[in-house]
Each structure stands twice: as structure tokens, then as C-alpha cells.
Image (cartoon, rainbow, N blue to C red; front, side, top):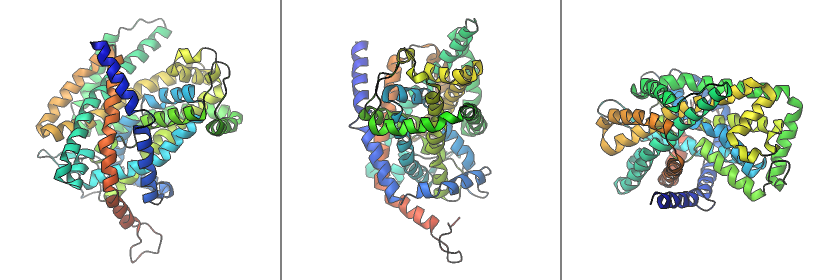
Length: 468
């Protein structure tokens, strides 16, 4: 019975995430929003980074729970994860170097999607009786589209709640435990998963039970620190091998245009494979359109929804254009993706070997610690997402019980066999996107109007100067 159920879940998952449902839908919506915004996310990228810097202290006198910067970091905590390390390697192994190009494409169109998500999240957010600022797809569906669409909002909340226990909790805890056990084995230490599970329970509980403000505080510290350390390590590798970097970029573009023949341990990949795996892994990594990130952005202390929208569009840029690109370049210049047997060794091993080839033992440490911290931060971010879905479905009093249950599930994930859980998590993560994408298309005129008003020059300012 269980095997039949697992097969059914896997079949549905392959359809939802296949080449004919979610992937083209996410890309079409992203392109439509990019055009509707007149390519503003690309043109105003420097302005977005300036807004992020100013958003470290929030906007005094305005409502919210977290500073705009911490809201962004909470969102990135749920976004920057194993996809930035393992996902990139998987894309290259399955789709060839050209898959990286298509990851960039998903990020570029995903910037418009994330801008719209974050803007709508602040525009249509609500305040609970105990002072929590709640928002996200379920709220902009209910408040933006009206009562007749509440069934769609409830669907999103149900999908998000279930996904939080899988993709945002058990699978991440399992990744932490597996990598710590492997690191210990490399030094002759036998570490039992249950010991790691107990440590995770204590660490996660200390943060999660404190609610969104404590999560935002920890995420605001942990996410920039871990991202900077990982990026710095990658940049060191690229600097040492600077003469190989132009060739790596050329390889990415040529493989995207012509595919890549089999070489060494790499089995070869067609143009279609590059597109399929590049888009799929890119969307999995930056989560543009899935509807999770706007839940975090809705907590921001901000005086204009568009300002948080600008920070929202930085999500895929930082996640994919910066972090994933560095992972990809290190893998390509190392040549490890062509090593014999690398396809059987696994994507996580590929990234570790690539960094180790350039940095020795420190490279392996960097990847392992990065995987552990990225996975732990994802647990923090997804607790916020799941809690907001639970509040929408059951009211604000359900928040604390949810956080307790979410925390207690962490050690279960660290010690369990998760093949079915992975498929269920992937499925519900994908199902979240469908109600959200429908809402984004229907509410896009609202976002376009808000963006035009924000960037229209005031009467006392010269033309072309943003109304900030």
C-alpha cells in the first residue's frame, strides 16, 4: 500500500514539476510581469540595493514587525539553501553547463515575480489581535480579489502549511544530520544521528519558540554571515584560477546554445535538457512565484509597499545570480563535473570535490558547513511561512502550538528515512505556486499602478527622479 502511494505521489510530482505545467507557467508569468513593469526590476537594481541599505532601521512611525532588511533576510533564510550548492551541481550533471544559463533566465524574470509578490504582501496585509502582521498570497487573494476567491486563498494556506513540515523542516533537518555525520566520518568520528537531532531540537527551539521577531533577528545575522563566507570562499577560488573564468562563461553560453557532448564522466546533455534542468533547479533555488517569500516580506516596517517590493526582487538576484553562479563557476573551472563516476557519486559530492580541488581540506569544510547553515536557516524561514498559513486557517491563537509542533518535528526529520517525504514536500511546494500565480496575474494591474506612482517624478523634482 505504501509503495503504491509513494508511486502515485511521485507520478503526480513529476507532472506538476514537469515541462508542461509549473515550469512553463512560472516562466510565462515572470515574463508577463517583467514586460508589464517595463523591465523596471532590471533598470532599478541599484536603487533596490540602496533601498535595502536604508532599510536596516525600518521606517519610523510606520507599522510592521521587522525592519525591511530583516524581512528580506528572513525571506532569504527560506530561499538560500541546499539548492545553492546541491541544486547547481544537479543542474550541471543533468543538463550540462548550459543549464546555468537557464538558471540565470529564471532569476531575471523571477525578479519581477518577487517584486509583485512582496508589494502585494504589504499592500493587502492584516494585523492580528495580538499584533502580528500577516500577509502573503492567502491575504492578497482574500483582500485583493474578494470573497468569491477565498477558496483559492485557503488552498494556498493548506498547501503552505503541509509544505512547511516537509520542504521547510524534515528534509532540511535530514540534510543537516547527514552532512554532520559525513564530516565526522571524514575524521574517524562516529556521530549518531539522534545526537545531532537533539542538538538541532535545542537550537531550533531556542529560536523558533521566540516567534517571528527572534527569527528575524537570528536570520538578519546568520544569513548575511553565511552567504558572505560562502561567497568569499568561492571568490578566492575564482581569483586563484582567474584565467579559467572566461572559459567557464564561454562554456555556459555555448552549451546553452548547442548542448554538450559526452566527455569524461559526464554523459552529455541536449539543449532541451539544459533548459529543463536549468529552469527547474533555478525555480527550486530562488522560489520566485511559489508564494513563500511574500509571507516574510509582509512583516516589514515600511511606508510604501513598493519599497519592500524592491527588496523582494533582490531575492532571486542574490540567490541565483550571485550565490548559484559562484557555485557553478567553481564546479566548472575545477573540471570535477567531468570526472569518471561523478554522476554516481552525487551532486553534493561534486560541489565538495570542486572546492577541495582548489582549496584542499578547507574547501570540503566550507561546503559542508555551508550546507548545514543553509539548511538550518531554511528551517527558520519556513517556520514563519507555515505559521502564517496556520494563522490564516485557524486564527492567531494557533501560532504558538504550531511553532511547538514544528520544533518537535525537527529531530524526526533528522533521523528518519525521507524518500516519500521528499516527494510529498516537492509536490506541495509546487502546488503552492498555482493559486499564487493566478492571483499575481489577476492583481498585476494593482502592482503596475503602484510602481508607476512610486517612480513618477513629483512636481517639485526633475523628470526621471524616483519618488522616494
